[in-house]
Length: 286
Image (cartoon, rainbow, N blue to C red):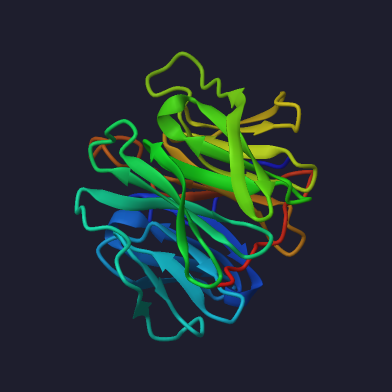
């Protein structure tokens, strides 16, 4: 593994949800509470405002992208296209979107959370290619990273306050039988063991940002911790594998809740080279 590099500087307050896609020419992530999408390409970094909150972004199979706003989705038909709002999915203004995953069939799974992180007040939703909305799990707290194994048979999922990564079976493109996969060991410091965003590599191992610990972990398919990356800020939020060979690990970070004079590089994106490539991004069929 190569040296960890800061590739952006602290240009975001709460950077989240990094995704590499050739359709937008590189890496894209959200500055969540600014409501912005940031894109890193060979030409530099661009920023696009989409709303009061940007929870996640994924490419669409038909072109453009889908973005999670406060309590609704929005889509474009081309990467630089006009944003089209879809109907709100719930009425409670104290609940917002937070992170997502996409199945090999292009089904979007998007989670929510209460602003006060009330236990069980969030949900994990399944949004089908035909626009139908189902509830996969009706009682989650901080719905976070979700990623599928290379064969599509399993999906790994983090509900952050549980302190663990869970696993679902993917049966006929529906997630069932949620059960614990691994307890996340973030050390003994404050905020340790808080699994945040995650991704899955070509061996079926899970990379997960451990928020509050300044670490990113890799757990193999048996749940064994095989790598631990130290990040020089305390709040890594998510990670993805990208680059032309899918062997660059990108890590977003946050300065949410930090004093103004603390951790001046918080909000940066970091990158390092790893041995096992990731999986190509799944486009949303919706």
